[in-house]
Length: 147
Image (tube, rainbow, N blue to C red; front, side, top):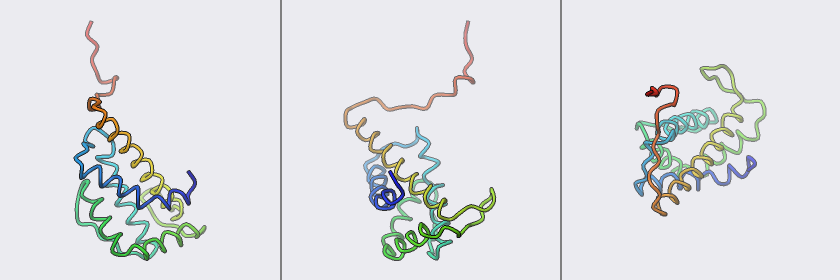
């Protein structure tokens, strides 16, 4: 999917994630448990670079709902900021790793939310079909082999 597709699907992707969480989908066995709150935080930082004023006070997965609420309150402004960032080929922002194009930071977040929504849809389908829960097992290198 190209960038315009990610952008057009962004709000729907966030809604898919929220619906899954509200339906009780357990993300503890996935990387989303940790990565989703971090990606929401980074997205807010990117949007704030573009002129928005997102302020997050929650931790964990609740951060997504808090972001969504603020997004809906200023939807047209936020979408305008996203469009402006995506069109700007020169703006950059400072990160712990150095300077990064703001446009690239936004594209990566849009891609993340697209992939996360896809993953959650797969998990919900598996759950609806009665598939057993998937568990994270320790890395095979850390498991002692018994002889």
